[in-house]
Length: 124
Image (cartoon, rainbow, N blue to C red; front, top):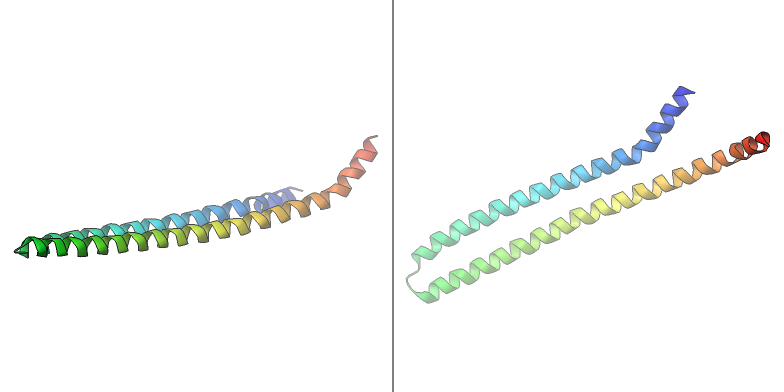
């Protein structure tokens, strides 16, 4: 009896463990992406600053500003797309886990229904 309860508990907690694992992986991936974005942004800012000091006229400085802005826009857009992909993947996996857990609950309820009906009739 104890083993059966232990097995049922492990089965019922398994989806939660899978969700925690998915969330941990997603957070790790997002943190790595943000670290990369920060490092790349810092490098681009330093390069921009160094190149800006070499410009002799306003037109050259404006061209550097434009190139820097376009580069940063591209980096931010790519980072947003990557983050969305990670979150969408985690959401999809979580949905599959919820569907599987719901099916398990339905199966357990269907299996328990006859025993519950017998117990109800016996109690009357």
